Image 1: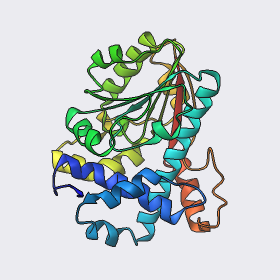
Image 2: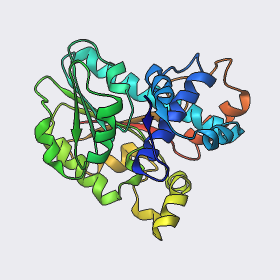
Image 3: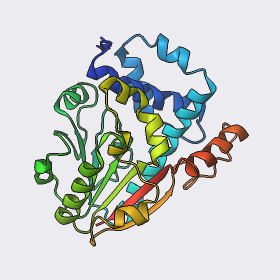
Image 4: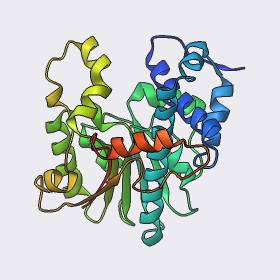
Length: 276
């Protein structure tokens, strides 16, 4: 029996990025494959016709490529940390139905998936915890969740498409608190400049009647701006689209490579790495 997802619910917000990762796997098989997304889409009862129609557009398919690159970049950073900390805690912040933590599992690390309680309730039905894995319901801005993470063998946190919805002050406070609580840890996440964030949030902010997009977290120069938050931070970054992969794959057109350069350049799309 398929798991039913209703329209206009929090569950629907989980389906859309899941569908994106499924499409990435089909459109860019040489770059990305998410077997869990493909499987779950087939196990969910939901009217996908609107998403399928939109998925044929040029810009939508470039959006799927963006998703693929982000997941690959963050997985690279997690695996890089595990090379020197094989028993580390791997923490997916704002996990939704993403399975990146499990795809990085090396047999000895511990995986924690964090999200709001109503999201974790769905995840527990569709993606129950596997070996060495725990799903934790929480609000990321309530740092009580720190107590549920064991950092004794190292800890690497990652967040995909999450911090665009944080206010700048919330983001700064969270990073400062994490630096104090998890020395020796690493946080990696995607970020972008103000103009790109404004475009991403346009619909959501309009619906919420929020005027000041500048209150939301964006960053033009992660190394310079985030380093000012605390002397405990070592910050570096790479291009989101081309920093880890040159995209010279047969599935990626020259036009998309051009858009990727615009994204990393003018739009300041970056993967930021913070060492605590």
